[in-house]
Image (cartoon, rainbow, N blue to C red; front, side, top):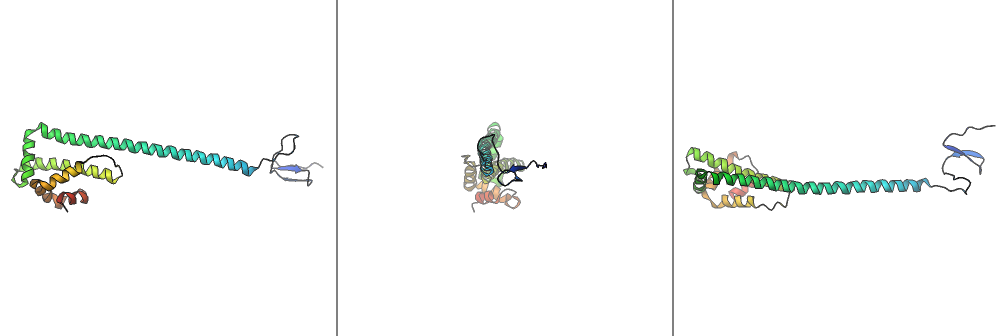
Amino acid sequence: MASLFLPWQQWDPTCGARRPFTHLHYGSQPEKVVDRQRLNSWITLLANLGVLGGLVFVGLEIRQNTSQLRVDASQAITESVNQLNAGVYGDPTLADVLLRGEQDFGALEPIERLRFEDYQYSRLNVAEYILDLEAEGVSGLNFRFVDYVVNQYQIKPGLQQFIRSVEATWAGSDDLISRLIGR
């Protein structure tokens, strides 16, 4: 009588019956059992090594991107400060307005006040940008611009007058305004 073997079954001569396929036979050599668990362990190990390699690669990419972000941020800050300085050096009347406004903001004419305020807001925007980068973890910029601006605001009476006049409508960070006012 012919029996039908399913693909996942084989004839087991020790028991005279069909049983599920659990090991492989190689030719006429003595029966060599390939342990599926051992094979699965090797496959799992290789897969885990692949995942680990991928994580290391991602970590290196993040480090490289962070370094590039630091370089880009440093260049942007330098360009901003250079543009502020170029505006002062290229316009003697602005330089005069700034010098007088730093001593007595209230003594400036309305158009001079506008120019003074515009320049100061630009300085404060650069300082805010630096503080935002530091808050986001982009450290190591080695910029002392915020410290310089805070120092200027604490020692020059016109800058103190200016910052107190805009304190109520300040849209920047509380940290910067507190430092500028000296709290």
